Amino acid sequence: MAEQLTGLAGDRALLGRTSTAERVSDILRSRIAEGYFPPGTRLSEDGIGGALGVSRNTLREAFRLLTHERLLIHELNRGVFVRVLTVEDVEDIYRTRSLVECAVVRGLGAPPYRLDRLAEAVEEGRRAAAGNDWKELGTANIHFHRELVALAGSERTDELMRSVFAELRLAFHVVDHPRRLHEPYLARNAEILRALRAGDRHGAERLLETYLADSLERVVEVYRRQVGEDAAGT
Image 1 (cartoon, helix red, strand yellow):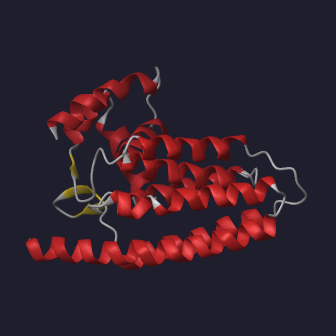
Image 2 (tube, one colour):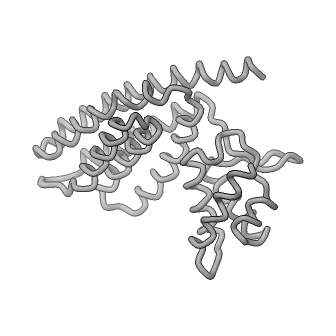
Image 3 (tube, one colour):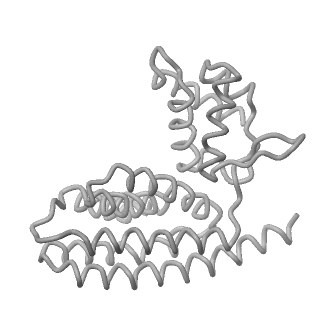
């Protein structure tokens, strides 16, 4: 935890002069999504509050916001922990993704579409794969889907899916073999991008629907095995 707190102190500048709970929760959400605080980690009020230079009340409000987003869990008489997802949680995340992401593509309307940031996410993934950085490839995959959702031009949808994608990262951080989990979907991201560039939103939706179904099956298979192994080792 000491190493994490040292790095977290560098985020103090992001708070500005007025350190609100929302800003603190933004920092912690990003750190959790990056795997800085892995699932199951107990978060120290004193340590994190000291590193960020915020009051205990502000930090507790930030913890409350992230608990509402299902990223943290409060255990009576034990403290606040980064949540460890169940297999049912993962399945529900994918149901939400399918409902929202497919609806976004279906509702795009007439082409052309603004795809620059989607293309940037594909290139980000290619660079990560070329450098054998498989966790970074997972991040690029999330960025691709975040930019796909952003095509709807809806702040509410963006906010909803920000939390969903952050939850999904909790599952990714438990998996020991990120290459096998993420690499097959780089080419499929590019395939969806090509369909949208061609103005074929119906084809893109079909590709996306199959993609998410296959990803759910793969993630649940790996996650169930990993969580089972971790439980057996305790």
